[in-house]
Image (cartoon, rainbow, N blue to C red; front, side, top):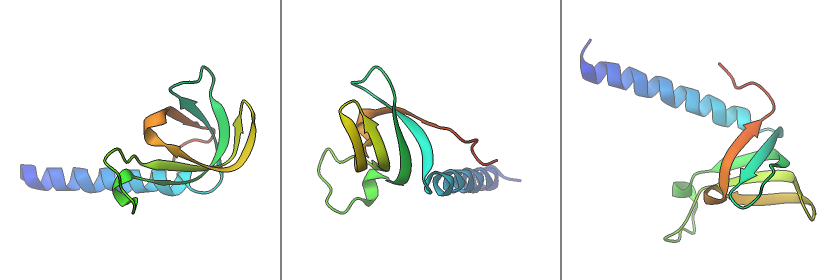
Length: 99
């Protein structure tokens, strides 16, 4: 097997795993979001995710977004919100990831 074939198989496997994770994440998965400017994580349900490259109205500082529901902020609960990737440090889901 040549190096190109190994790379191609590895890339295909990584792409499949990535798509499985994305499919898993969309579907009201409970999660905690860790933000740059907050000491404690914020609870929510994941509604969807979109990388910055796919956002139609791009700006020079355009980030991907994480769409969530029932975001429990320090000042109340938001029924829906779009979170910029650049504001998020980590995302912790409460269910095991697919194998």
